[in-house]
Length: 415
Image 1 (tube, rainbow, N blue to C red):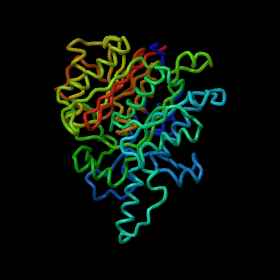
Image 2: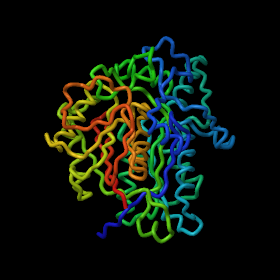
Image 3: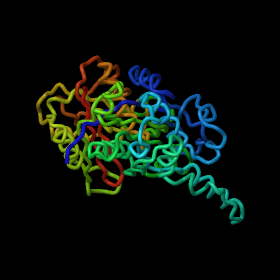
Image 4: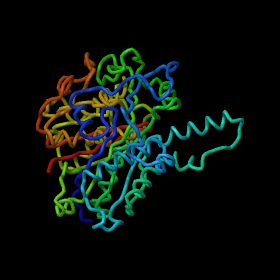
């Protein structure tokens, strides 16, 4: 089977540090934290009382009343980010076969807000079954991909990817594969998440997975720091328009970069913990690089999964050193969840955008809040701390890992 080349021609972002791509990128480069006290609900009795919420966001500014009524927040985020990516890509859909355009969209939790609200209202209503007729379609994880296609008339491949916090990269990888196999010309891919609710915050808190640095939210996400104590929850969406290379060139599209390789593996180790030696993660990176025909020595930037958990950060470092050994490479590393928080199923999508913009602008965003680097981290690794650095980025790699042992890596290269 002939393998077609796949490029990214549009991006869209709705994040705690910006409600569109330009602001998101400017604040990522500036190292501006998106963390603050939770405003969505009263979290005063919770162990963790802060998160990375969207700022100055009003869905009614983007969507009409009918869309707002029938959608959960995670779907609203998906519609808004995908709208921006589609506009950015500039392709003329009316000149295409609708079956050539698809959507692959993911989420880790889907309509958690809707599910929590409806079940709570049922419990408080003496068991009276007064559920909304929109209850089921609002919380289904696949509804975001379905409504993006419905909104735009795309009739090609359409489904949702779910692999916990690896979901964003899984969606990108699947879109990459379908296009290079010739089963689509354009696919809108990405992820969205709305996890800032009592059940979600309470559930992750009870697992002791989140930071409890309530007196300093902005400094709480501190990947690789010896005092890190857990991740900071984030919300939002990231969208990418993936396109067959020849099709993009024929219409004069702006190309952000090429998807050169992608791979997934499983840790087969623990329900929620990563493999301590990073075996699955290192194999995902190795396979993605092999598919891209790129050696680790050629990678300029790695956006790590690094969520600021004691175990997870070090296991990823182990995975990286499984590839690099003790050699000091040109490779620069940063953990941008220190800025955005952890967007769960949307994390891979917004971090893919960071990789692409790092290639475009020659700038690598920093890892903020890391004051005392964990002494277990080898000295040959170049982790970008505190401030962004200028660097030529011809190849960028992004890691995402998820509960259940999912590992997903995507490699991008400049055209």
